[in-house]
Length: 384
Ligand code: SF4
Image (cartoon, rainbow, N blue to C red):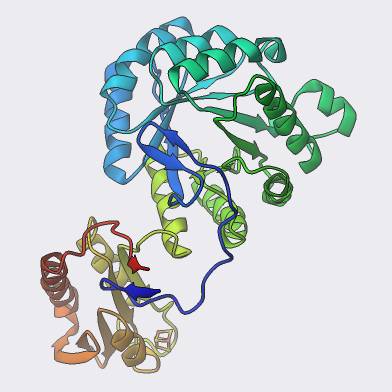
């Protein structure tokens, strides 16, 4: 196997092989199998407000979100689904709790998939036959989304709380009901707010079925805490090859969830890196303001659509080494910056010109990469 690398060095180490899962299509986005791990988010608008919901979906799409979920708590929301599903650029999943009638409405509306929470849908088990038939007719996948906070009361009684075993048993029980009716176009989530419980639940689930898995730490918290929890939990699972699609849940705007999700995948090498700033933490040896430089370079290059690694280093201890390894970098010292491009020093500039010089050079490199056919999000090309 020969790997042709477009602009990024090949990873020296790799993660565990991906768990083998069956693949399903969420409209035009494959989930499971050998499909890249996809990033999802959920709108925060009232779904019935079609304009606002489509506007938020457009913002999510622009930020790189690949699948979006919308809540359907009322008939007005259900009535809005056909237009939203048709006009959204990315597949729309309807999120249904409590009312089975909205499952059917979402399927009829042409949603790309439906998420059901078996723990809180009235007499869900009795409805499975009809849901399976309708979903099969329309080619609509179903996500069985078990949540610690709304676990099936039967399992809550059996296990005392939402243990990994309880979450997994709930999900697999519901799958078995769908399987009885010949329906297997299913993906599963078993979310918990505690990453340790969540990791264990997904590990168990991964060993007991081949359905694609949607990873999530539910109610992960405010932005900082939720980002850390999600990165830790997803990182542990994805490094083991577990997980086919991810949703970061933050008490923060959904675009932020999407950015964090993408960053997690990029950090693990599961998605082509775009802009990566390698900057030192600074210390008593720093001879420039590294924080400011890193922030200004990051801001100046935001939206960069080619994979570019930029090193911003505070002194000559590790500076030249890191700057040489990156596509572009600066090693600072004595109020000056040595600018490196592809390992070579191209010039030395005073501190106040470091940011503009890096941005100018980054633009030139990006132009060359684009001419060479390296585009945003394009994976490394592997030739068998
Ligand atoms: S590169 Fe220099 S300033 Fe930055 S952390 Fe290392 S020793 Fe400190």
